[in-house]
Length: 480
Ligand SMILES: NC(=O)c1ccc[n+]([C@@H]2O[C@H](COP(=O)([O-])OP(=O)(O)OC[C@H]3O[C@@H](n4cnc5c(N)ncnc54)[C@H](OP(=O)(O)O)[C@@H]3O)[C@@H](O)[C@H]2O)c1
Image (cartoon, rainbow, N blue to C red; front, side, top):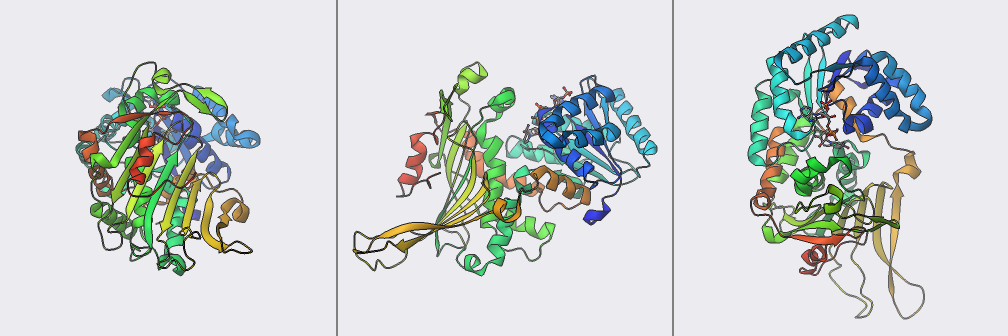
């Protein structure tokens, strides 16, 4: 694996370069890395069906980078020298031959020794046909290394994920494939590792003897925005739960790897998924938002937003069990939704109550709760009981807290971290083929026999039925 100082010269080819992901995430991340000098001899070739040329692409990029505020000028300067565009029109073999010729010409011009990244910033249904065209045209066989980066969702169920893996493996070895889940690029998510395995006070209690249950929430206030066709076809289970929430689950539940090495880490994550029990229909609640208010503003319901009635779930809450010796009997509650009260990504670990009630009825203490906030306001909170001053004895819950921004200032963007890892050839933070397939296995029952979809008002935390999911076991969602 190369070190940070040794990123080799390469061509970074983005398929779907006219899209939203490129505009909002990839381009700013590439420009940040490029303008900081982190990318040595990096040339970015945007690819799309649109009939754009280099000049049009650069103008579009300049506009996109304006959102970066005062740094926009510097970022755009980077783009003026190393952004190019090649149209593949309708994607005919001759279009891909022309693309290959352009790739080789740029490599000659910039003295790039054939190292190529193919980033698929494409709608998921375009992954398989595009990998086929890349393979047929021989683009993946340069003089240097080739890496394929694939966005999520990877397949729409277990069988389509297997099929896509097979199509990819016809041209790329698994070691060349980087399935991206941008949650894994977040510092706070990676820190779960350090937090769990290097702090003995947590490491020693991270098990069924001490933990009552775990809650994982990823909430958004946005609706479907420009992604209506995609989202209505896919729904929240496939768009969020199978990837982001399941990745968080694996990091919370995994055993310590034998070494801090990519395959050792990914092996442990797969073991969690193999031990997890597929979610039963009665353990899942689906929801669909209706008109409501968020931060004082009226927002339309999902049907109004997409302009048609729909039963696609915009909210999912479910209960999942990991049947191994560390976690047997400890429920993991996963919840995600659009148009919720506020944006929040959080892991809540509720510990078991103290075994003895020393002070009699009327002064029951809450059990300890550890809240790991991934965004916004990244950090940890540990809740514990203290005696309120005076008599009679009363308890109150207090909080120890840590905030990344206070300790370290702003954190790097997840995509910057992940792009660097791709260029360095470090797959630790990417999802392996068996991992993605195991994750689909967990949700197969819900894809075959869809749970009922309950309405919820925009600006809330989802349908009441999601509260009942925990309530039936005497638990409740940690107040967000
Ligand atoms: N947007 C985000 O914030 C975000 C976040 C996380 C993950 N993702 C994932 O990233 C990927 C791209 O997302 P996006 O929001 O950028 O999508 P998008 O804007 O809908 O599409 C990206 C580009 O793909 C091209 N395209 C569309 N249909 C195609 C087809 N059938 N064959 C070939 N090319 C096609 C289009 O460019 P041309 O018309 O020029 O070909 C389009 O501009 C998706 O897999 C998504 O799930 C997106």
